[in-house]
Image (cartoon, rainbow, N blue to C red; front, side):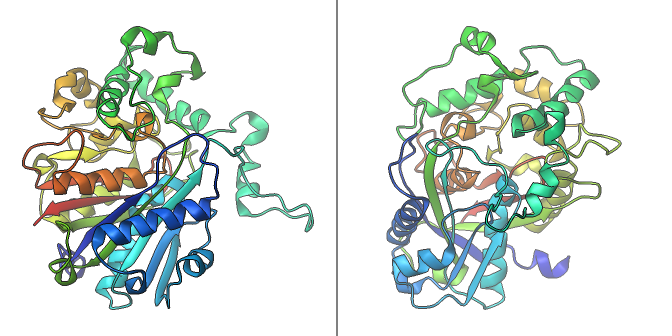
Length: 394
């Protein structure tokens, strides 16, 4: 533990880059990845030649080798990928921190490029020529015959139990959808920038899978995001305000599965989040009360109060009560959340957009800017091995 704690504030995110968020991008994941990385390079005030490390998701269709070729990067001395979809979002930064601290790279770019709106959704990659399945196909084959074929169906099982155990009302998750949309309405880059959401529209929206309504779910889009991690020393000489990485951790808990950890004694607790949260806050030397703004992974709205509980913001079973006073979640409230609109109203870039927004909060450039931010929290995807980050203003 002592060695891990000593990494506090020794690295920083110094560049952020984005493409537009759309539902018909008209180009490949590779092209969007290159655009986002070039934007991050420009933002940081470095050159492409400075990049010597790269991390993306195993699910990403833009292969690192092709990105290197397209950008003309001379050499990568470090490269890796993080699994488990959105659970690997903050993990990309964890890998980058490890590489920089170990001296394996100086400037590591982390990115995600996704076409979830304009390409058909595929689960698994069956190779007809080889007549074989990859590991994901074997895993999913255990569930698809029984109707559990989408993330919303998997999370709905956890949500149903959570509602039953704590006697939660039918409209209890409305504040999450409400605050996300309010923040998106201030963000010109958000997909739902021009579309307000009323309580009536929320309640009357169709059930995707009970108890999750349409507006309880994230928004599939096309887009790419990138961040650049370097040492705190390098960060001092670059053009942007550094977002120092005070804590970053991953969590993989016993009896875990990919989205279907139904055989645990308690499926209303996000066990991986409990584990990585404890480590992350110890690294940063702070408690949840010190967090000024949070970007909670909001693929589905019940996961926000569940994360409040798992990370220690409230006690077990108190997450829904906390969010009922929506003013708590607003820009001048007790815990402002998802200030760009989150995955539900800005767009679903598998959590990388949450990291970008957390950096904006440190810089003071968010469209829903919280005053005097010192600590900015980001969380990764839920129902899978997960990860989180605490950023600090210098």
